[in-house]
Amino acid sequence: MNFTLKIWRQKGAKDSGQFVTYPIKDISSDSSFLEMIDILNNQLVEKGEEPIAFDHDCREGICGMCSMYINGHPHGPENLITTCQLHMRSFKDGDSITIEPWRSSAFPVIKDLVVDRSAFDRIIQAGGYVSVNTGNAQDANNIPIPKTDADKAFDAATCIGCGACVAACKNASAMLFTSAKVSQLALLPQGQVEAKARVENMVAQMDKEGFGACTNTGACSAECPKGISIENIARMNREFIKAKLSSENV
Image 1 (cartoon, rainbow, N blue to C red):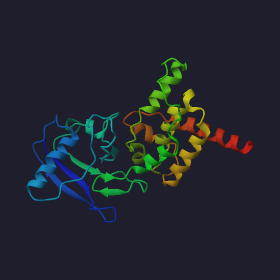
Image 2: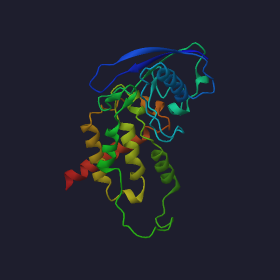
Image 3: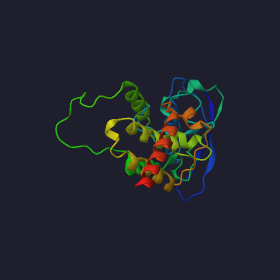
Image 4: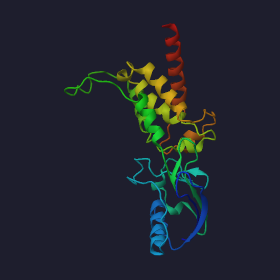
C-alpha cells in the first residue's frame, strides 16, 4: 500500500511548526500505524534526516502514550482503539493521511507529535488517591461493595489518560478524564473519607492547568479509546455540588 503522509514537524515548544509531506510506499496492510511510522523514520535516518518524534511504550493499547490526531480523529478513524492498535488496512491504498499532535494549551508540544501531558499527572496528584492504613492486606470481602457500583468504578478506572478526550473537545476540556478519576473512587466505600476534598482539589487543578469547560457535545466519549461514559461527568458535577454545599454549611 502507498500513502501520502502530511505530518506536523516542530523542533521545540517555542518553535513554529509546519506540515511536511512524506510519500511512503510498499506498506503492508497488516502493519500497525506506529510500525508504518517506524518504517518512515528508518528511511529518514538512512537519508540523514531527522526522524519524527512520537510517543509510544506498550503498543498494546494500555499505556495511552501513542497520542496522534489522524485525519481529524484522536487515535484515527476506528472506534475504541488507540493509535498503536490501528492498522493500515483501515485506510485505502493511495490515501493522504494527516497526522498531528493533540491541540491544547494545557498540552504544549515538546517536539513533532510529542506533547507534554503532565497536566494530567498534576490533576491526579491533587486528589486521585485514597489514604489507607499500611499493614497486612485485608480480605477481599472485608468491605462488601455492590456489584453495580464495582462495575461502574472499574469502567471508570479503565481510563488510560491518553488525552483523546481533550483532543476531541472543541474547548480542550479535561472533564471526562477528571470525572473518570473522581468516579472510580467516589463509587467505592474506601473513597468516601476524602470524597469532598478530592473533587474540589481535582477540579481546581484541572481549571488551573488551563483546560476548557465541558461542551456537552459528547465528542470526548465518542473518541475515547476505552469508551469512558459521560455519565462520569454528571457524577463528578453532583459530587462537586455536594462538596460545595457541605462547605457552605460548615
